[in-house]
Image (cartoon, rainbow, N blue to C red; front, top):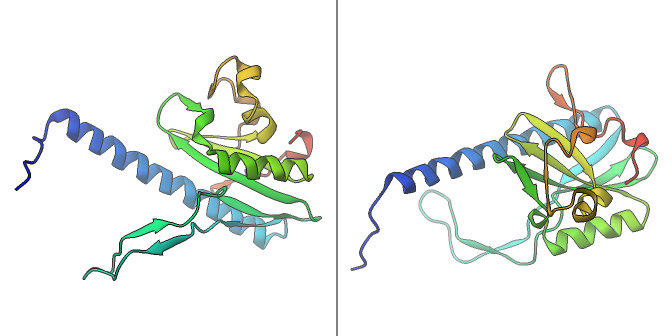
Length: 183
């Protein structure tokens, strides 16, 4: 019989921090999905969450849950088209810390975002800091952060120019003002 590790206050703290971060990340995704519906309804864009390809590794348990594995590396979180025909691809990232690292975007995701940009589409990383500050960082800025900011991470101060605002009644306007940016 395997020995269980003792539960310490540090273990509990890490568990609580992880649970809070997952809940805030899910809330961020919900905000994005609501904004996508707003944009779709108003004929501004048609953007959808990219499904994660996975394969079940067995039957479902009594509660309907099953064990699965991903069948290929993750693609960017959202893909779609803007009114007028321009492709849009973006990755959504949330953090509860004061910085967000370049490595948060995988090499597979980076390659897709770069291809979108090279083909004339719009690509960016939509960042959430602490579930109360949001930024749309053009892919060309994100991918060159080492040269632009002198390090491989960004802070909210670095991203002031890319702040995304909320409209009433709480729509995250992540596409607003894109005509003024170089993507």
